[in-house]
Length: 160
Length: 76
Image 1 (cartoon, each protein chain N blue to C red):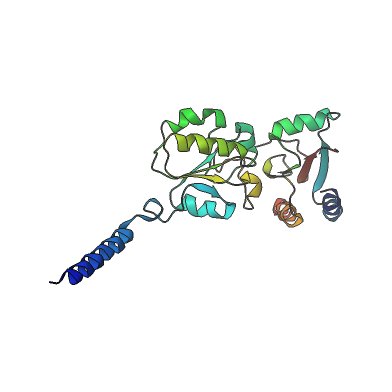
Image 2: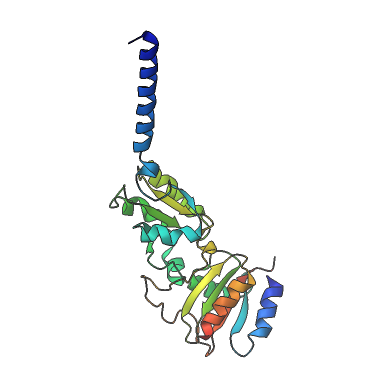
C-alpha cells in the first residue's frame, strides 16, 4: 500500500472512531430528563411522572396553606438533614414561594453531589394548577379560617 | 390589583365574599389571619370554603382569569 493510501485509511478510521464515540456518549446523563437547571411550572408534572422527588422547602404553615400535589414538605433549614437520606442519582424538583429559597437548596444539593436537581423558577406563584391544602398530600386543612357561611377570598395586601 | 379585585367583588357579590385584609400594621385581625394562613408575601390571595377551610392560595400579581378560576372552583 502506498504511503498516500495509508494516510487516507488512517484518516477514515479516525473519523469512524470519532463518530462512533459521539454516538455512544450518554445524552443528559443517560435519560430523557433535561440537565439540572431552573424549570418552568409546566415541566414539573413531567419530571414528577419520570420519578422525580418533589420537595417544597417552605415552612410547614405555607405548605399547609397550599402545595403542589405529591410534594413533601422539607423546610429549607431541614434540607441538609433530610437530604442525607436521599438518593443522589435520583432527580429532585425543588420549589418555594418565589424560587429564592429553593435556589439556595438547589446550590446546596448540587454541592453535595446530587446529579439531577431542578428549581421551579418563580416558585409556586407560577403554578397554575390546583394546590392541595393540609399538612400531608391530599389531606384537608380543616377549619383554618373563620366560617363565614359563604366561600371567601381574602386579599392580603399593603396600601403602600 | 385593585381594579381587578373591585370588579370581581361586584361580580361575585352574594356568592363569594371578597375581603381585602390590610397588612399595614393597623388591623390586628388581618395580621392574625395572615399568620394563620402562613402568608409571607403581598399580595397573597387565600381561597376559603364556607366552612373556613383553606382551598388554596396564589401569591403575587395574578391574572384576573386565574383569580376567576379559583373563585369558580369555590362555588363548585
